[in-house]
Amino acid sequence: MIVLGLTGSIGMGKSATAEMFAERGVPVHSADAAVHRLYAGPAAAAIEALFPGAVIDGTVDRDRLGARVLGDAEALKRLEALVHPLVRREETAFLDAARGRGEPLAVLDIPLLFETGGEGRVDKVLVVTAPADVQRSRVLARPGMSEARFKAILAKQMPDAEKRRRADFTIDTSEGFDAARRAVADLIDRVRAGGLREAPPSGLPAISPARVEIGSSTVGDKPISPLAGEMPGKAEGGASRKV
View 1 (tube, helix red, strand yellow):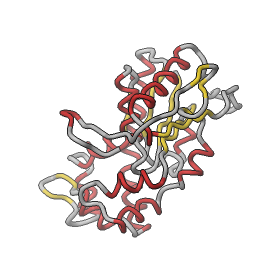
View 2: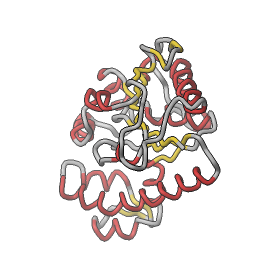
View 3: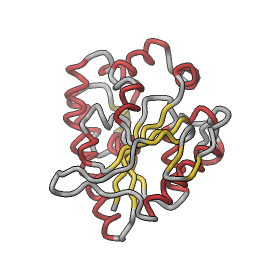
């Protein structure tokens, strides 16, 4: 089974891209969703002990918690030391189940994949990207977002250019759903056709394809059309949601 790490900075369209994999039947584990589940109960008491006042009615209030940790490196480290092992436990169970079903591909949607060394536990990395002006306009359109908060979030994320440099694949989501879906579908088809390989257990490098910029180049011998138009995000029920 190929484990694909999916990552991208805030506002790049990573969540929408993860949904495209899920739409095509690929199992996807979202680290963000896992954190939401943990904040809704399992980790709430421990977080309240670390950050009194961050929990309301048994659920972590993300705005209150964010106000306590953004800009405070030590506080953020304490939070991550608590939450990351719990997320990893869920992730391991997800991968075990996918392997047990004989899945050819599973996706780990991890916002801070490179920042936390997560690339070491995946076979390939797909980075979702967009121009800086598109990223900024998307993020600042979110309710409750401010320029200062946006800058604080960016400060803890690896620059997009470095993520793209390290990636095996990239998708630019600034230009539309349809072309991005075609790019995702083509990558899935490559896996199902045996065009990608797992990293060998010995740690020796696998023979892998050259890095591909999906949307401006090719995947294998098959051309990928340029992406066109901004990619809006839709949640269940059709309401706008973050990308």
